[in-house]
Image (tube, rainbow, N blue to C red; front, side, top):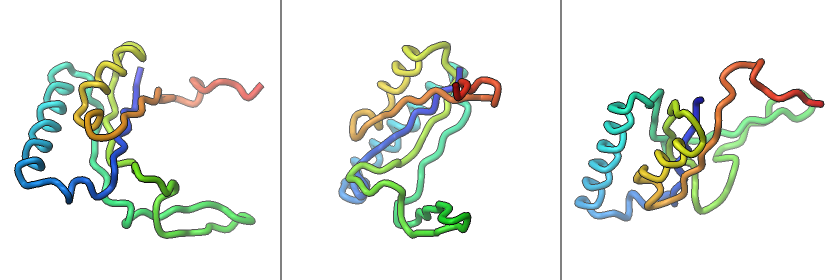
Length: 123
């Protein structure tokens, strides 16, 4: 089953790190990514740009309302993600707990519906 591992962290924390801390962080994420690849569970991953680049879109009276900024205005923002294929939630949680993001922020593990027929009925 596919799981999305969402990485939330305090925005700006990267800029507050020393060069050495940043290098260690990059190395830790690289090692984690390589472990996912070696285990053949990695389906995709990306780091997100700062929330200052975000745009929020919603329909109001069937017309798009476009706002600058993220949907959620909180201290911890969505910073990146890993999409993995794991046999079950426990395995996905185990991978999330190994992510460097778990040490400096919060990891959210979400199962992915991979096809419309997988969705639960509305009744």
